[in-house]
Structures are given as C-alpha cells and as structure tokens.
Length: 478
Image (cartoon, rainbow, N blue to C red; front, side, top):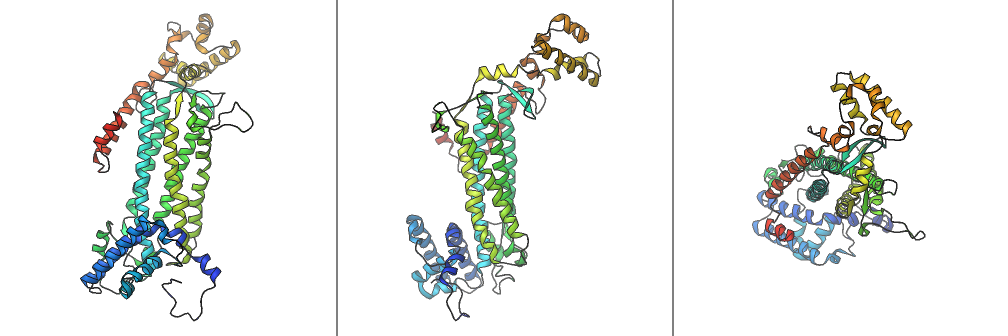
C-alpha cells in the first residue's frame, strides 16, 4: 500500500475506509502538472544545495520517463494502491531510482504540491476553454454576416416587441461570449501565483529560490502567505463561476432557438444531424441538442454551489475537505468545454427560414413605437404620442389588420400630423430596422459594421496566436 505517511501509526487503515478516502480516481488528471511541478522542485532543491546536479538530473529524467510512459499507456496507472497522484508519482520514482526518489519531497508538502498542481492544470484548461469560446464566436459572427439584413421578430416578456435582424440576435451572443472570455482570462491571471514552497502551512525551511521556481513553472511570482497559499481555492471557484455563466449563456441561446424552431414560430430549421425523433410519433423532429445544452446548465451551477459550500466553513489552513476540489474539474469545467464544442456543432447545423422570418417581423404591431416617433418628429410630446399611437394600435386590432393597413381616412383622423407621409413605407419593416443605425442598434448597416469589427478583431487575435497556422487555415478554406 503506497503511502507518504504512516511512521507514527502502529496499525493499518481499514481497507474500506482507505479506498473511500483515496483521491487518485479524481486527481490522476493532475499527473502532468504533478510531474511538471516535481521537475521544477528538483531544480529548486539543487539550487538550495539539497540535491546535487547529478541527483536532480536523474530525478528529472525519471519523472519525464514516468509521464511519457503514462501518456503512451494510460492503463499503466491502473490497479495501483496509491491513494493520490503524489504517492503514485513517488512510488513509481522509487521503482526507477530507488531511495533517491525519497529525497524529492524534502521541504514540500502535499498541501503546497496539490495547490500548485491544481493551478497549473486549471490554467491549461482555461486556455482551452478560451480558445473554444473564440471558435464559437467565429461561427456566430459568420452567422450574423449571413443574416445581417434578415428581419426577425424581437421579443420582450415573450411577446412580440420590435423587429430586429437575425444577425443582431447572433451578435448578442457574441457579446456574451466575449464577457465570458474576459472572465476566463481574468481567472487565469489571478491563478498566476505559485504556491510551491509554502510547505504544509508555514513555509519551507530550505533556502529555495521561490521567485525562480515560480518563473520555471510559468507563474508571475510566488504566493506571499503560506497559510493562504495552501488553502486558497478562489481561482477554482472563479473558474466554476465563469463556467456556470458560460453554461447559462449557452442555455439562453438554446432556449431561443428551441422556440424559433417550433412549428408555431417556424423561424429556424434544424438539420437532421442535430435532431432526434420520437419512438411513438413519426412526425416529430426534436431539438434534443439544444434541450441537453439547456439541461446541463444545472450541473454547472451545482458544481459552483457545491464548492462554495465546501469552502465556506473551513478553518485555516489546509483541510481534507479540499480533496473535493478535484471533482470540480471533471464535473464543472470539462463538461462546459464540451458544451461549447457541442454548441459549435449546433450553430453549424441551423438555417433560418427567411420567408417565415420576414413575414413574422411585419406583423403584430411591432412598428407602433415608430409611429409614436414619427409623431414626436412632427412636434407631439412623446407621452402624448405614445397614447395616440396606442389608439391607432387599438383601431388596427378592431379592424383585424396592421397599423399601416388602416384606411387613409381613419389614419387622417387619428394622426392628422402624419397625413402627408406614406405610412406604408415609413412603417415598413425595412424602414423600422434602418432607423436603428446607432451604435448597438439592429439596423442591417450597423450589424454589418459590427460583423466587420468582430472579424477584424478575431483575425488580429488569430494572427497573434502561435498555435494558429494561417497556411493550414487557408488550405481548409480552399
């Protein structure tokens, strides 16, 4: 039984208890981070005079070989009796280099070790999440470009309100995702200090250069208080909050498009690639992908709530309760990355039904606000104009038609100030949309300008991304 403790114990732990308290099934995900941190620690110990240069080299090589073996054969870690990833690594090192492996843990604790592993791995996941969010933005911007001038009913209170464009609707989610990305990036920045060298809670007694150690691991610097360093999980809570909000935004998109794809709305058509049928009703085409995207949001919120509940009453410094944080990675962050990836598939497989969208955008009195605005332009105070426009709406309802379809005589009686205007033109969907051309508006010209702005921003970002291969991308386009 591989343990990193036990000298003061006379008996063995209960087998059932030992299995129950093991964290390896969850923290084995930290193997790469643990090896990375351990390699840096060997260098730090050599710098402090604890290890010779040759000993540090042998340990580093053995650590890297262990990780390489685990990558090539993931099953090599199966069946181990190690209770956590740290004891797994040390046990494998003992097999490789003998007693030298037992010197690696000098001056450090599993407390600062796991805090460092968690930050290293979390930052890698946040990079992946940020990239996936950017990729989803690209798809939504492309959708907005194709639908910049497509009228679509806009809703408040789930009631038709004013016409918008489908492109404007897509860009709303691009904006949400941009805020999500800034939260992810901010979280990564605040996870940028290195806990290694904090020991169990009081710091290390060895003259380790923590500034250099932090640089070696890609951190901006060391943590400044050992008590806080080993117990801090703010970065994980922040990441889970960011993931929860990402999931909420995806859920809102799913809800919109579920409604848009209903027979009653009929604005959106789902390809067969992202829909399922009914086991009983042959005619059904269900938006299961969007419903699952909406449903999984509850789990993301639950993981955040669970971690906060775990943290709320913990005394300083490290407590075993924090072992539960590893599951937050597998249950709170990985699924949201997957949700973003699935959302990309969904976006690629929807198509707006332009005829239905245009027809619906011209119905329901959604141009009533513009009628009031026209009255204001003729000199009528807005509150009065609002009331009189409401009277025109009532008349249209009573006659079973749209505002602009009322007879010229009736319109002349209700809004004589506008008698010289062609209201069928002034209140058309195209005119209503075109007026909203200010920053943030839904006018097709404004949407196209916003699309161009986003495209330029994304191209500039990709040009700075060393992982982006421009030539390969161009080949894909061809």
